[in-house]
Length: 588
Ligand code: BES
Ligand code: ZN
Image (cartoon, rainbow, N blue to C red; front, side, top):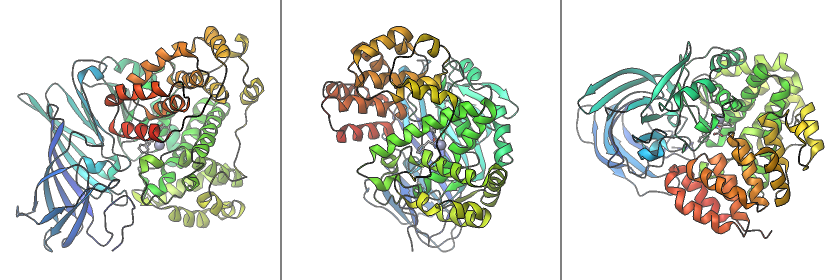
């Protein structure tokens, strides 16, 4: 009789879904998916509350084909509509026939012009945190893990890829039917697919990369180190449990840097810098195969268990592959983004807790670097308290204790006290988990290169210094410049280093934010290109925010958003729209 997840209608007294069979017809003309979902339940009987959003329900039948009573409740703003089904006591399967909406919040339907090939359409899903319910009716809470089989019918010119094991492809006239299965249980937010003109290249014994044909070679070059990363992560956390680790390079409107969909990580093409400088995102998504996908947060309130652990592992992998000095630069960048996030939440300090209380709050609005970077600092603090000799075995025990389970912050706390009592004694765990802002004992990144950068401050770096910089140092430099730098200095920096032409999106966006603060208009053409072609929220948010804050550029923000929002994924459209609405103009 309890709603244990604030973002689901699931009632803990009701049967649980164990297995889903999904049969879907993808129609690019109407931008809808017509589907059937068969849910196999742990037991029969009683009302069953499912999560849905914008689904059109046609039929609900039991395992014998008899129609069942059902009711679709009015939509609530964050949760969507409760679908209540009366399940007979002797029935453990139900089949729901339904259609998705063209506005489904998980789905982006791309016209051919929005792909790199320009010839064929593309469709992809992004279900985390609570968007799976706009694709299929289910108990959309990570507390309830499911296995599934899926059958997708798509135009024959396209491939349907799923984050699952491939079974078969059958071509029938102008359509193809692609079948997949997932034998390992997953939280519903990891349900994922993409349909498009896709090709692959082998990267290693358990990995290949998929992308549109014009992108696939570049992607294969950029992500070539994936096997070394898998091995490094196995050293840290134990055996890789998902058999394959394939990568899908997404269209540029993909709203995240990466998404850890099991067996098929989705990555933004903005990582393709041509120098492998941004592959920490790949290491991050890989590390989720343990922290997030094996051991999952039980609800968005425990999101730090997914992301904090994963950032920690990401930096350990990076340290192994690139050395401590460079890993520390990443930690320093992380700290900058954390300080910024804490500042942004000045009026909502409760969102700076690791363990949050998101009743009535949309997880997409609460999203920030806090669970990532404060979670990372907490784990690093625990590591420093006991040393790696004790901390590394603790991490392996943690994974080994909760595989294929969804856990809460309290489960972690109890486990920590039992398995690593010295750390529990030396660190104020309650303060870290429940407190707001940053604890006084937060570890600080140290490195020689950081000292040099700190000494430079906001001066324009001389060529003999900047010549040695790797992209991460450029990022750190740009992010440490004052919000209102001078247009003259921008001109000097651009003249020397041509930052507007950078092929590295992290540098480019860092630079564009600086130019907005300084009203340096020669860069605004490039800004328009970026906002019109890239949908990654990590870039959209600071750019729109910087424009909207400055009275001179506020109209430009509204104009760009009006023109480009149709190109963004529904999640990005919603998040940027909300940001523009609440952003206050500060006089310059
Ligand atoms: N799982 C997240 C992306 C996500 C989080 C999607 C919450 C929806 C809701 C993914 O693993 C992630 O953290 N991506 C980061 C990568 C970075 C931390 C290296 C991103 O997209 O910026
Ligand atoms: Zn992550």
